[in-house]
Image (cartoon, rainbow, N blue to C red; front, side, top):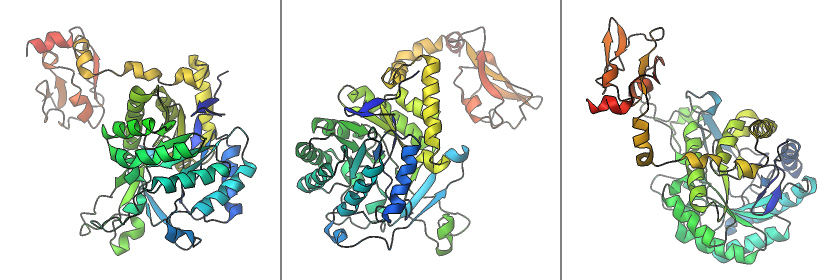
Length: 441
């Protein structure tokens, strides 16, 4: 039977499936919530078999230290329509105040009382630009019993939920500002790793882009980070309603005509970015730092895909938003069954297995040209709409009201298959190679 236990930054976890830091989806989940409500949520995660927990992120701005923030803890979310069912995008906005260090310490103390001994608790910090202050925060959480420190360089609704063009005030540069800048993040990580004895990780941001994220990861590895989380929710804005004066389409805010800056997650594009960043981080830094995958992971298949691309652990948020807390059990069971079926004894055996197949296009183009494939039309599905013929390819035309492929002109580029609205065209085996056909064009 497959062994799902593994390590994150040298710390044993009972499963690679962990809980990402989710600070303020609603009042009960926010660190300013009543303790009994807050800890009850975490007991559900532990009972579901979660492997590790990243606690909700906390900050230290002085103006936030003298008030229990419960009066404006509110956020609105909306699922955007799309072709992937409940894997489509969700948009999140709100003015969630940063929880204080004191709130975070109190919640950590309470959660530790009910946490299993083999489930590490990771304190997540909205580190300010002041390295000494970041180190002070980390030391307090280490003293309170945190097993690891995660510097949150990814969360991005605050301070970006503001007027377009409004300047960011001094002291508000945290989250994505820190995570997208090697110059900002490196001295913070250096100060924190020198201040504490427990492992330190960094959550990166897709706002850093590629190859910018490589520079960010390189800087935090050199500063002593033991793991990185490869992606997070990017900033977004909903499409304007072109039939309503260009106002926003957010249902809750439609009456006031608002279209707020938001973050977007849970969708196919987010997950593809996760896969790409995970593979790149693993390919460049896999021998130097542990990689935690995250961003749009909903099913067991998604978790396996991310691990195959180099993630040693997974941080979940989308999964429970779409499918509930019990989805953790389903993902874990799928992973165990998959590993048993295909002969992977440990998570380490599975990790990075797909990286061997990632090749630059010039390296594989010549081999691909010798493939014997050509476009083929399934007349039972073709409606004669003509989209494929009214396109860039001269290998397809309409004949007797249906699409027809002239095979000797087909280079198997797949354009007709991609654009067919009925799925009536596919690349199928044929007698002549692509190379033999395109030589005569």
